Length: 521
Image (cartoon, rainbow, N blue to C red; front, side, top):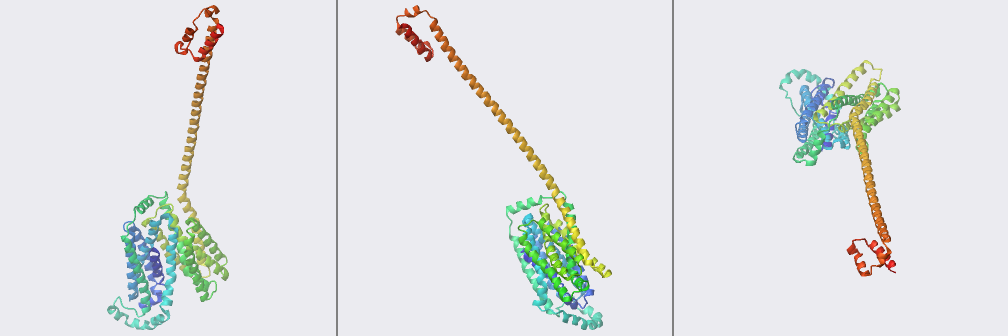
């Protein structure tokens, strides 16, 4: 559902470009005087990002996203009916608020569901946006057959008539009216209907109850906070400021640069612009599969290396058509995965809530507004210099420098904790080994004492038996022979010397009987 929502978000954002002339015709204005609608939409997007970041921490995510998509649907339906420039600018500002909430909420919801394991889902989300931006011009121009030539002629033909009757018809003319060009109405109505259908799925998800495991996982994620949380968000703000600013700047000015500076034909320059956005969208699609086997930090490093190398080649060989084609395609592919990889990367070290996501989304939106505007002014003052190429090179250097600082801040507390944990484990291992050695020594001492006691007991037993035998034999030998022979009653002697009556050992009894028998003989 999120990918479907971002597909509609990409179409609703990109539909303004190919229908800009038709909208100007609809309000009887020329293009230059109606450029404020881009400024109004940009400020609305910034406001929507801030409002969405605050509401996401206090509201149900599905309810907020469903309401923002409903507001987007209403805006898309009403834009073709606007008949005054002021009303169109206001409507674009409100439209920008709704898409800002949707953009911030989609990123936060991906992180809330999958956490630091959501890198492939984040890539799929932003690929859907790029796919929608690619489909919008096709829908407006090819499928519906909107013609800007007739709209421009209509503007020129009616300019004098509107100048004469504008003051008299201004009061009587209504703010909303059915547009003369019905193809314009159908282009916005189809996108609006699609977004309305997707919003129904968000409201349906309100009735889905989360399991206890998901709640436990969410509470565990809320407790994870990096030591330098605020510093990481500020640096990420600058990182996305330079990245998105360079991306939009090159995509917006590559056509004019190729025609004025590199000497390309308009058809070739248009194809070069399509190559940039085509490789951008294609690489975002491939990044869905790359994210399953590569870490977000690795993908950011590869993107930084590719953008830095391609922008450097563009600066060094700015007038070479071959280098322009190759470097533009590489630059588009390199820029594709940076934003979703950055959001997935920061989630590995600290939990991103609504306000935190809104903070770096605002940084990206400011870069999208400020850098192209400044480059347009500088390019007008220095037409002979490739200001666009210098800008993207400077932005590539800035992002390549900022990411190692981000990585150092994010991992330094982890490295310290790992060292302390490893030290404690080593201490535990040493203590356990010393205790084991002491235990073994104690066991050996106890065994030695037991064996010594057993040896002494055996020796004492042997000595006792030997002494008893010697004493018995000595007593027998020392008695007079006459006294022994005078004893005539041998049976009584045998009875007296029996073990039961004398209490002597069987060995001494046998020795006595044998000696007596010998003496008797």
